[in-house]
Every structure is written in structure tokens, then in C-alpha cells.
Image (cartoon, rainbow, N blue to C red; front, side, top):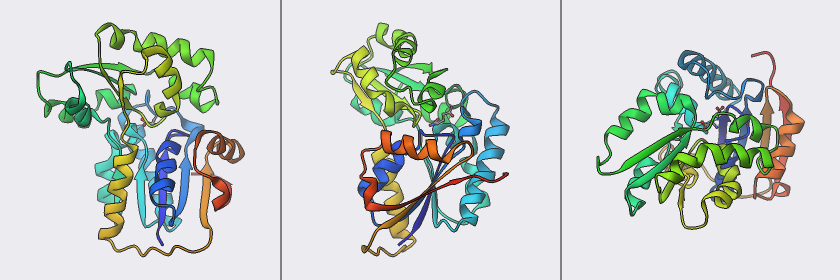
Length: 267
Ligand code: DGL
């Protein structure tokens, strides 16, 4: 079986890990959260690229056979450099604007992502490939990631801040909303409360894990489906709180795994 590294600035990538455990429970995983430095979304491109590379190298040193860059912001700023530097498959995540363009009925799509993702060349190059009759209302979700990191995804404060961020998207009449940050699926309840049930919400975690599966098949990582698989959580801030958040936010049954939590050393 393979050892897969899943990296995010904080707890957002748990939405991807959760899907990976659903689709590919037979593998071992290391989840690495750089919560001491989250949010990444308002930091400079160079900082995000350098830090992401350092942490992905750490995952390689831990023995990972593949890495999921479970962070739209890090993918936008750093995936090319990371792929050039590491000789293992690196799978990234991108806001699902392409599936959203295919899904929308009225041609109006809201995109909620971090400022760094929305400003990135990678995102804007992707946007430029999409039909011009589709209107994208882009909104940076400033302040949302710290609330989610603090375990307040379902709080009144998160609802109020989201209401402000989603106002323009709602006013424009969007029928589709792209969640362009892996933290945001944890706000799904609040989003539904504000925008109702009819808006289509696009989150790419399922597609990302399918891509991971294809990569593992291509590199012939053997599947061994016996016993409990190892699930290691590493945090640069507080490994116990990361574990508590994983238990709270993920649907996967953690009892099916051997769990370990570690503090990231001085990196
Ligand atoms: N979860 C991340 C993303 O997908 C980053 C959020 C942040 O640290 O700002 O963009």
C-alpha cells in the first residue's frame, strides 16, 4: 500500500483527506497542517511557494509515495516548483470553475476563494480558457479561514462574515457557487442557510481523489487491504487540536485506523 501525504495551510485539507479515506481507505496517510502559519491566502506568492516546497520535502523525507497539495492557494503559487523538485506524483487542487461553467443554467457563477488564489496567474489562465458568455463573480473570503481554524465553522460569527462575502454573488443571481478553498466545504451548512438549497455548490474533492487514484495506479502502488491503516496527523501548531478537529470535521470513522499525532519540529 502507498503512503500518501496530504498538505494544507491548516485544517482545510481535511475535506480532501476525508474523501481520500472514503475512496482509498487501503492506504496510509500523513496529514500535515501548517496551522502556525495559516492563513496562507493573504501572504505573498514567494512566501507561499517557499514554505509549501519545504513542507512537501518534509513529506517526502517521511517516506510519502505521493502528495496531495490539498490547498488551492499553495497549488496556485507553488505546484510547478514542487513538481520540478520532487520525484513523486504531486496532485493539486484548483477552484472548479470549469465544471461550474458546464453546470450553470443562467451563466452566473460565484467563486469564493482566497485572495492569493484569485490573484494568481494559474487561476486567471484557467479562467481565460472558459466561455466568455459565463460571468464569474469572484470574492475573496478574508477572515473565514481563521474562524474555521478556531473551530468556529458553525458559529454566528462565521455566518455573519459569510453573509457579507456572499452578498455580491447573491445580488448577481448566481445559480452556481465554486468553493475555491479547501476550508470552505466546512461552511456548507452556513452557505445553504444563506443561499438556499437550489444553488449548485461545486467542490472538487471527489475529482481530486479520483486523480490521486489514477496516479497511484499509473505508478503501480500496490494495494494491501488488511488490518488497520496508519493515519498520522502532523501540525506546526498543536497536534492535539488538529486531531480533535479531524474527529469533528471528518465523516470518516477514525476507529478504522491507527492514529498518531505529532508536532512538526523546527522547520
Ligand atoms: N485551504 C487553503 C486553500 O485551499 C488555504 C487557506 C488559507 O490558508 O488561506 O486555499
